[in-house]
Length: 402
Image 1 (cartoon, rainbow, N blue to C red):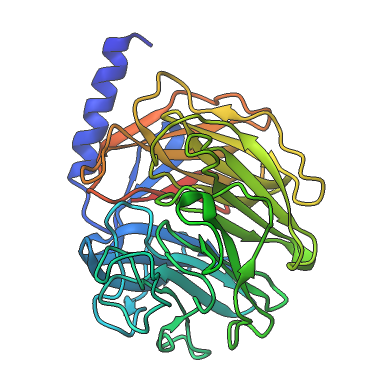
Image 2: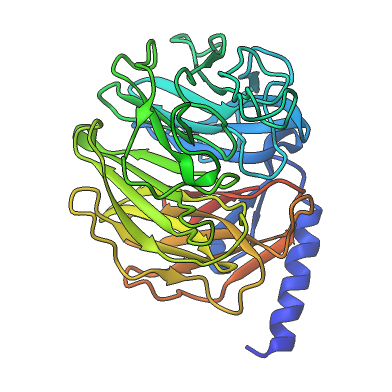
């Protein structure tokens, strides 16, 4: 196909998508293999989880960027329709969307839905204050909040702060759960006794063995002094038999902002491995993703304005050669993955945006060997501070919520 034909097709797709109301689907790939659905209520920052029964669980953000609210809805038809949304946070305006990193994460397993998020400066209860920061400074005392859906599925429990021993929450935390009732909430911060600055930051993890009813106090996941990129997110994933994987970005010597994989076979003891290097003397404000596929765990991240994904083995720490999105990179961020049963992988990302400016939504299907299957897709600009979420449909094909 010529570039003129591609441009014309893209223009038609953008015009069609712009006319589709929230909650309605638009097919933007041959044979409807990729379907785009707007988040209900024009919500931002969709995060999704599938439970064992195939129910799709969605959390999204509404409100001012620095202090807003979270809402939850579920779908039994792959996102074609959603239940009436219910509030997640019990404290008003206790969530944050600014920067696209600190928003909610969701997990669903063993009959429970779990949500964790960085609290806004209006959030209560507070985390311990960092004595090295002036009172009122951004993020000082911001809590790592958690809530779970009631057993009846009608409301979320009062939000709880899980930061008891760590300080200086900044980049976004994450939550994961398994079918045995183990729940893990992870974030990065520093110890009161540790070094200052990014070099003193490390990944912390709080674990629950009773489905989120109670959590043990957080503890460092790994002792290696890699530091942690302050305003970057991380991602935690729970597999079978207490296997836990974490992706995060380091900040060694202020310029070695590499992607690291932490892995545990028992949910207690972690080992680590450097996955992808990046020398940059600034925080790139990036996020990661982890998802289970038919052949193992897949991870995605950003390096040098490009997005990548690879297969990760949480037992051996082996990582396959990273696969990048096709074409020339242009501020590509916020990669999300969906793994199809036939071995195909959908990689979704944003492109061309900035801190407070929404970029374009883009995607590519890859075959089981990691080669692009068909042309990449691109759609209209998405709102500031937002991104997409990817889902493999049970009958084949993929859905993107944005």
